Every structure is written in structure tokens, then in C-alpha cells.
Length: 345
Image 1: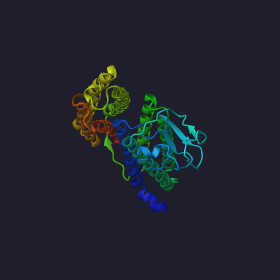
Image 2: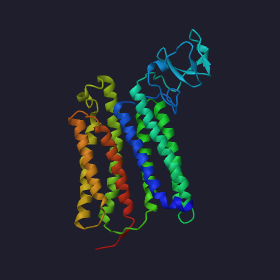
Image 3: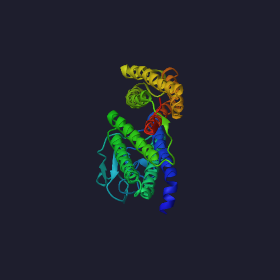
């Protein structure tokens, strides 16, 4: 079994990375559709493992069986069943207690199921991470750091799940959303580092001091852009609440200086990464991932232009975010590649 795990460890780890990115994509879809409060409780959804599909399932009815923890919307308030019981002909307050985490009591079936799919992706990513940690025991003797880091990833996923719960309980507080996003990037970096440690063969690239410095700068700029973008997205969400989700040309009206900083900062990001591309090509350093960085930056720029000037066409927000997180991953792996260089003139 140990031999099988070691032979297939990188496949399992790559699958884990894919699932983590699926969670990020699902989270982007949640933000794009405003579904963050589709499930007002956590980890269940309205007290169910499989969420309701109709509002009637969340309303009090005579002669209906309720399980402890199930939620109804009563007088625009979330009420939680105290125990298992069957309702009588009239509503009995003694059987219920108010949900105290927050006062958001709205049911939208589309939002509920989008948020549920997001949580389902998170659960699958958690199971994949746990399987990776089990498989990492195959490295406990020759590369114990792989085992330690794999289990750190498991705890990281647990922490990320807890952050997700705090986001719901805070009714989508901006600071908590940003922290949630940064924690996802940290998990991506951790899984990529594990992949780097267990790679099958060493690839020595030519050393160039300026390129290494630029990679560090580019990685930092990407993180800053993600934080700025999260703030812009929050301001857009606030504007949607005011003008509605149909008048998209007004969504950026209240974004203020955050949007202009985010847009202008992208010029710096593009310049640094193009400089990296030029150095890699001029000196034939062999870093093939630099080309992927330019492609991802192109997607970033195009999706950003689409949101700003074509009024948020469907999918543009998700593409913008997922391209940014993949860009971060490629830049980070490129930085790890610089650890395996040979000196050259």
C-alpha cells in the first residue's frame, strides 16, 4: 500500500489542487450571483443536509414533522426547532427558538443551491486533501517534510471551512471575505510546494538575478491586486443592493478610488510580468511557465475590460477571479523553479 501511495502521490496531490481551484471558482460564482447568504446557517443549509427547493418547505404547516435544528422563516425571522416534534393546528412558540447568529431571513432557491454547491466543492476538496495527507505517509522516512506539510494542508482546509462559517455569520463582512480569499491562496501555495518537493526529476534553469527579483515582485503585486479586487467587488455588491441586479451600467458608480487604483495598478502588474517575459526570452533561461503568466494576464485584462466597459457580461467576474488565482499559482511555482538554477554568464 505504501508503494502504491508513493507512486500515485503526485496524481492525488494534483487532484487536490484542482479541487481547491474548483472551490475558488464556486466561490467566485457565489459572489457573481450574490448567493453568499443562500444558506443562512453552517454547515447545514436551513437545517438540512440537502437544502430545500421551495419556500413552502421553510414555512410553518400544521401536522408536519420537524427534526431538531431544522429552520423555518416565521414573521420574517429564522426560527430553529428545539427538538423533534409534529406541529399541532396552531403555531407553538415553545417548540422554537430564534436563530441568533444573524437576522438574514430570505430564501432564494437559486442562491441557496449555488451556495450549497460551493460548500459541496469545499467538502470534496477537504476529502481530497485528507487523502493526500494519508498518502504522504509514504514519504515519512525519506522526505518527512512532505508528510508534515500535507497534514498542515488538512488543518488549513479546516481553518478555511471555519472562515467560511464566520463569513456567513457576519452576513458577508468585507474583511472576512478578503481573509477567506487569502487563506485559499495560502492553501494553493502549500499544495504547489508539496508538488514541487515530490517532483520526479530535477530541471535546472539558467540563473538570472534580475528575473528572480522580478518574480518576487510580481507575486507580491498579484496578492495586492487580489485584495484590491475583493474590495472593489464588495463595493459593487453594495451598489447592486441599491440599484438592483438589472442596471449593470451603474454597478461601478460607487466604487470610488478603489476601482481606479485597481485598474491603474494593473498597468504596473502587466509591466513587471512583461519584463520577466523579455528577460527569459532574451537570455534563453528556459522558464516555460512565463508564457502561461502572459496568457493569464491577457485573460485578466480582457475580463477586467469586459466588466468595466461592457457592464459585467455573464461569467466575466468568475473568469477574472479564477485567472488571478491561477496566475498566483503559476508565479509561485515559477519562484520555486528558481531554487533549481545553474550559474551562467
